[in-house]
Length: 428
Image (tube, rainbow, N blue to C red):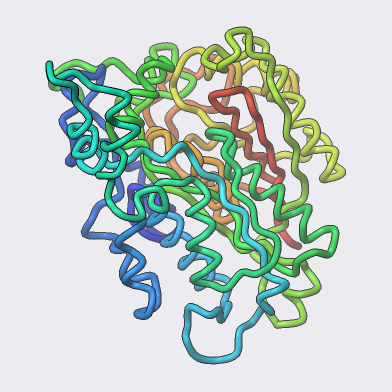
């Protein structure tokens, strides 16, 4: 699920064409923020009611936007994998429920403003100011029924597991933008130790709301734009004139499956999750707003993933970094790439996604992993936009082009300092 619509085909086509979904926000007035631009999934291209069984449509009323995105991505993952699950309401399921896991990365879901403020307004003192005591005794009672079940981060995995009857190991990971890659690593380990045959895994998040925008503003992630500026040209990863990012919404869920299980059911594996690594960066400010300048935490995650895959950096043919266009984040990623790849750092092509889809938070890593799989299948690099000179990295503007790709490195640092990296390899 990306701002280009539902499914990997829509995203891949747009990326290869060099399109951007960044535009003025259609749901909120962001006039008081540094930028009014976001990247949103168009309503006309996605309706959650179309991706759940008829018997489950009533439950969509208590789905936040983040949950909707995860449920939509799970629908696409199951369809692409050729699985029959409980969602089909007929036929024998492909994976026994007890052997089917689910790991979903989630962000800090932003409550819808009208629901929250309608309750807050009932907790005022005589002079009209907010009264915490009144909130605790009366105001909180005016939240809509099942309010918490709509906004708990674990509800993404909850709905996905119910719809598809995943009764195996399940977990929710909330580590900022690293969440979905960490979820892939969790599923990899669960399958590897024999506790599941397959898992739905990834993450999703919407940051295109007032709370999401405020968090990005205070974290100094937002690009400062001027009236009349072209939204499609705002996000410029690794460019000398990079000035920040814009919030996005989206996510990716993939089906991870043991090779022997896939072979037994006659499935065609698209790629191999060959290696995974994670680390924690040192955060001087304790919040991770300012990343390590030398990128050492990112290096640790990448090197762990390479070791897990039994490879060295020389075996990587392309890199998908976070690439937000936030100067201090780009600098840390640039330093990490230089440390890991040495003289090859300027020669390994980078795939940059944020200029097209913005910062999709907890969904970013899984979207990147999905793009990596498609790049390996197509033996092609998508186009890059908005960077005239990447200063020693192969990240400048370029059209989509054929490439020999055997292994792609995906890595995602996060606000808070958690880092995750994965090596995705073609299957000969």
